[in-house]
Length: 389
Image (tube, rainbow, N blue to C red):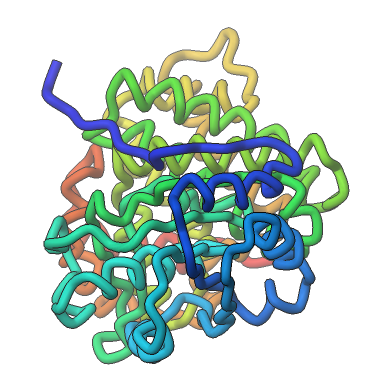
């Protein structure tokens, strides 16, 4: 048994209407002045009123900044920092999807570290802890509220880049499924598949272990049984609760076991073609898993079973291969793009995409099967040739 670390948010609060506890948690942190970080979509939904009312009960001074962009570039962070530095905040509260939560985490450390944000890219380059954060996801997908990763778009290099540090973990994460009831079908589908990718990749990753395996499998079960319902009947409270918990568990597993080649191949799609992170991950998932499946037939058979496939009477290889079928079918059922052609990629783009993906060692080194540039090209080519609907 190798040495491993297990990290997550300091305090986790879950359940319907758990957002009402945010004032109590802010009081425990002895906050005097807080900034809510969000985006314009969340601002328009009215969800923030529930957050603010709970904070006002403890007489906390609260400002709101709704300037987080989708898949935020580094420049977006730098612009928001100008406003944050004007006042002395002692708490940042992120309310939104993965982009908002990632931005909140990194703005926290930017306030206490002198380096340019680009200099923090990589693993554990952050020297000082940030100011406390409370993270409140409004989608069931990224798991950012319990991970020490944050992903941004480098417009200059046209690729996604990550900041990885335990200092990004929040003091409090509040996962309230009622906040996801109004998420539209397309976002529910993309973020839900993103969570499923986190669970599948972390379960089959090199760094997977006893602590994360059970968590990842439960996430796969919850997501596979509820994602279709949540997409096509967004008011299905049980489906939304399953998805919220599945996303949270997948995030915990991702945060400790890590992910692999699906994410590595997805990053250039996001950077160069502005493909949403969840869509890029979902599109590539079956093709990377088809490549990986031979590394551990037993594990992939367990994934198939967790996905709801009947593997009784099948050989181990047949059972393992059911994983690829189930993932493909789920993505098709909820109308996620199934081919690189669907997101604007041409055959001529593939060599450059493969070259960019091959540089993401942090993720490729955790994939259960090694990929060369040529093998990455083959996966992209297969995803390009896939039938479109």
